[in-house]
Length: 293
Image (cartoon, rainbow, N blue to C red; front, top):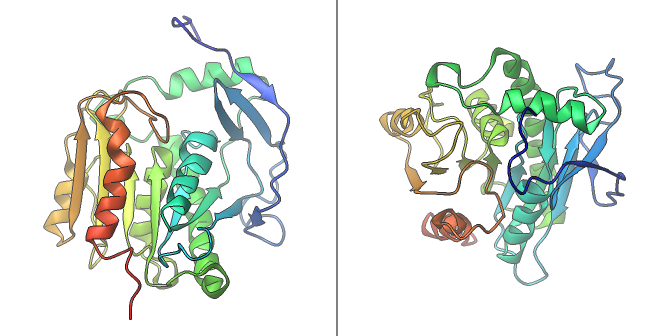
């Protein structure tokens, strides 16, 4: 990066940690990436863990303690510009919160675009990706294919959750998706694909693109959160919300004064810290936490 901001902690290589609860999405190579040769890398960014060069996608369950399950389930899709999976802040941390509130959570480690092996070269490429951009260039062209790959993995994950609903204590009619940044784009793309057997029952795109879309028929309930000082998506307006409403979908929007981009499960002393409790309140109000008779 050209300049080092005050307090910047350089990234460091981490040892790849065992993931004993992670379930491979595919029995062999993931379709479409059979020729991928990159090796998975874990990078430490301050107190966060970023996983990049993912070629073998997995699903990791975080289940509520016995006697506390509501039957609701959420597929958690971390962000990372499709160059990495922000596993700790937008994956594991959020999943633990959900499980603590009686919601079965499943973290998706989806396939990502190849990045340079060294942390220095990786950060150089990321500085270009996260530069502020105008509303006409929300999703760079090279992200479209990556979004499709991530959405394909998400569909497999949704099918897996429903197929194992009995084992995991999940109501197949209350399986939703929450995604952050690139994960929010993946959530929307998966929703627009609208496959009958891989359709989320509710969706929560968090600090993702706000551009208008053409919603699916009978749009699912949607929870949206964004900070007004988000450097990527704060100047797009609210086309996503407006188009969803025009199609008959119910939307709850939280637009925070501060929080930046990537607040996830971090606490910053801003009103964006409230998003998770507000999300749980929304789920309760929608009847998603109450078991069907």
